[in-house]
Length: 361
Image (tube, rainbow, N blue to C red; front, side):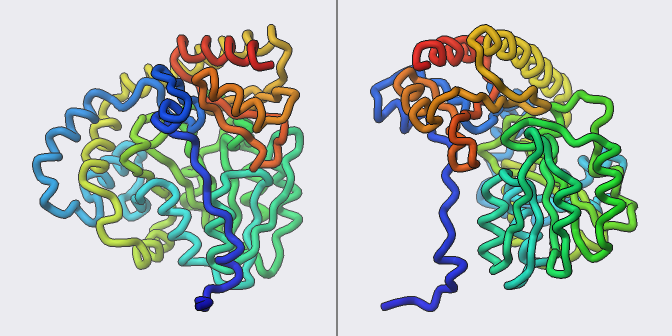
């Protein structure tokens, strides 16, 4: 029997995540695989976060605090804003879904860079809305092109800063001008998943637009720099009147108690965060030198990953690297048929990546 499922749902392609280590080791019989596919923290979580998880685990028979009260107030204190400006989610993906539920109806349009995070399009199309992708210019988000394609059906605009998968950065002046040109009824979402890795002075911060006459939402996560990807926790920064709308559609208990406790502890361990940021900076410099020696082109990154042109079919290189015990991400699904994306690992892991690339290429 054919179910009455809308065509825009039937047309969706499921999101394909990076290959897990255990899957590779099972398939190829490899015991020391290295995963550089999902932009994770190679140092793992903060020891303070692990201690908080162990302590909180004793009360798993209790529901978590539905509003993530302690975490929300800790974040508010660190950021110098009100708790009413923060919405917590089960990863940034949860917040992206809330945004679509609040703003999008069938026939609406969403303007976004092309390529960008694949989950945006899944959420947009699942609401019956249409994504309007604007190609990058030399790997950088084309804000002028995006502004030119905002029309009467546009409800939402996504930018990712730094951009994924190129790692390039939008300047403060460029984003200021973009926000100024936005219609008042369009919501801008600035996805700042890699915010902690940015060290350029001229970089924008979504919080700078909190009191703007335009509705600007910043998205951040504990999955990358804080090493809590397995707990799924992120947060949105936005005007209080808009946050109230997201709370109307937010699932109760959407952030589990382990994630809440670990996130608070991770925020307190600023020394571990700095250690992570310094590792990424040093290892990016190593990878730049190594890739230059091989003769491979790449974008200089403001995040914790590199988009690398391997001059061959990316899917083939991805599979060849798997046989060497290295998991990266083929960028074919993003439209870069000759590029892979690899996140920064430990120095020994980055050496293995370079050695494997030399071999398979």
